[in-house]
Amino acid sequence: MKVREERYQPSGRPKIEQKDIEGGDAVVVTIAEVEEEKVKGDKGDKLLLVLVVEEFPDKVHRLNKTQLAYMVEKLGDETNEWIGQKIPLVKTTQEFGSGSRVKDFDVVWVAAPDEWDTILKAGGSKVPATRKRGKR
Image 1 (tube, one colour):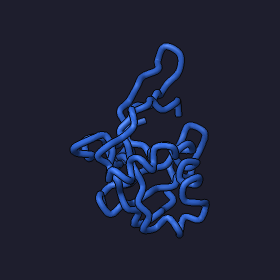
Image 2 (image 1 turned 60 degrees about the vertical axis):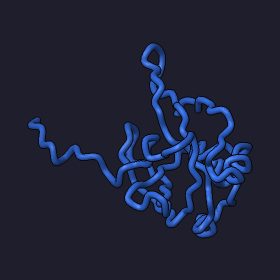
Image 3 (image 1 turned 135 degrees about the vertical axis):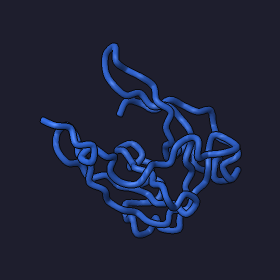
Image 4 (image 1 turned 180 degrees about the horizontal axis):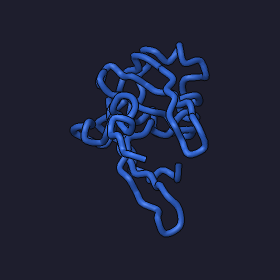
């Protein structure tokens, strides 16, 4: 099979990365839109929930199952009610892989529910000790 580069372009908009969070380990953002995005996985297509925030309108934040659970715990399960809500995003690391191929990656996550109040009150300038997030 001949490789055609145009077939293998990354899908969707770029994600919010650690380098986008300046001046600390957290940022408070305002949800502008909540969208669904279909991505191809090893076991077929998956549907992800994606946040578009006012502070980074050209980028998105894709929620995994853990972060989605955090959002539902803090804001409820009706995504239309998330619009306009302020949420904390934090710099952290996450493990990917298995066995001897486990590697830590720098990522941005929705803060854990017990961290929200501290981060929101400080406007993102103070964040509890960064914790490594589990395997995805």
